Picture 1 (cartoon, protein in one colour):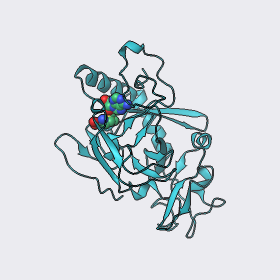
Picture 2 (cartoon, rainbow, N blue to C red):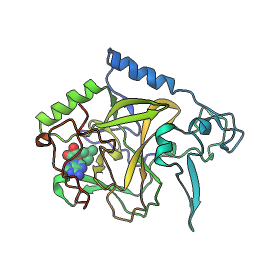
Picture 3 (cartoon, rainbow, N blue to C red):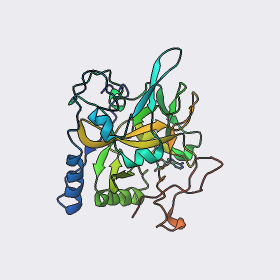
Picture 4 (cartoon, rainbow, N blue to C red):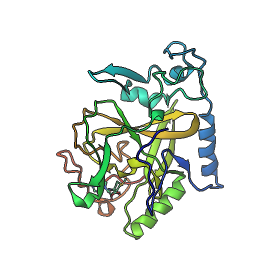
Length: 273
Ligand SMILES: C[S@@+](CC[C@H](N)C(=O)[O-])C[C@H]1O[C@@H](n2cnc3c(N)ncnc32)[C@H](O)[C@@H]1O
């Protein structure tokens, strides 16, 4: 994958995609590993371009994943699926394991992030840094991954409490993956190993969402897709708690949200405990 944002800093090791966190010899650790392995090795035998009716990767995904739209300069692939479909089927892209060509329309996230992103302090300094775009992004576009270490719940909770105790920002994202009637929960932490997506702030009225996408290897990718047309110089945001998993904590302990949307709920979502 080409990721032109890759760079080294003294406190963050840049990784373009999710990496496994520390091994955990527990039931939870082996459950997550089993789930990952069961997702491995999907591939198709299409000759060139993949079509919905015969491509195995598209069949598992419940239909076409992406659609090519044309504008006057170039074609752009956008997400083709409604939210309820995304929840029921995993998004599986074609990959090196498949026989189809590299130009197959079912390869998007693996081509890497768009190249218009930059990091700067947010308008409200209390949010810290934020991720911005210097070009227009059409609705449905893939922007970048939110990549870091994949952790079990107990690992995530212990890091979360450590961050709280030491007044450090929390980067851990809880992914609820709903596939075939089963929900798998996993935690992604880009604080020490992360990519450009680690700078995306929360908004109660976001312009992006996270979609789990798989190709080639079993860890899911957290792909950030635009929910709206995004204008140049806008901040990229998603809702950290869109599954409404946050009602188990009293409001006293919750952090204030500075997203400045008219629909702001006042508090940041909280990790499920
Ligand atoms: C994934 S990081 C985002 C990048 C971070 N702002 C930075 O400077 O590196 C998440 C952290 O950013 C801050 N943050 C993100 N969205 C926020 C919001 N809407 N209101 C207040 N703080 C926010 C919180 O400290 C949160 O723990």
